[in-house]
Image (cartoon, rainbow, N blue to C red; front, side, top):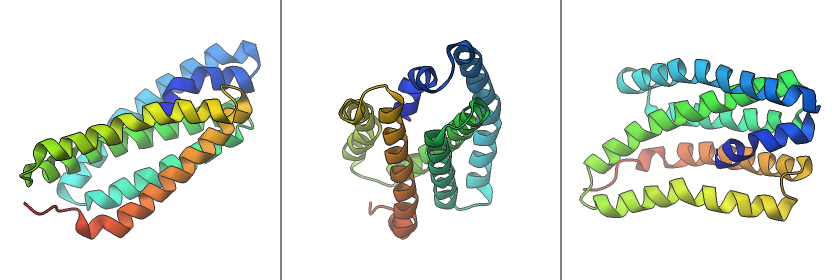
Length: 174
C-alpha cells in the first residue's frame, strides 16, 4: 500500500502518455473511492455476522496480490485504472476487517502495549522499507516500479498463505 499510494502518479507518468496522466489519476482515485467504501462496509458486516474474518483477510490479500501483479503488467490505461481500483478496494476491505480482528485480539490480551507496538511496527515498517527498496530497484522509473509491484504482489500472496497457516493460532493466550 505504501508503494502504490506514494508512487501512483510517478508510475503513471512513466507508463502513460503525458496527456493521459491527469485524467487517469482522477478516474483511478474516484473509482477506488466509490468501490472501496461499500465493499469495506459489506466485508465488515460479513466478518461480524457470517464469515470467518480470517477467510475475508485471505481473500482480500489474494485480490490485492492479483491487482498488483496486473498493475505491474500495465498494458493499457484502462487496465491500470481498473487494477488500481481493485487494489484499493481490496486494501480498504483488508484494513477494515484487520482492524476488527486486531481489536478482538487486543481485548483478550494482558500485554496490550506490547501487541500495539507490534502492530505499529507492522504498519509503519513497510512505509520505510518500500521506498528504500524502490531506490535499489531503479527509482520511480517504470522498471523499478514494476519490480516493486511484483515484490508487493508476492508479499500479499505470502500473507494470504500465512493467514491460512496461522488462522488456528489467532486467539492469543490471555
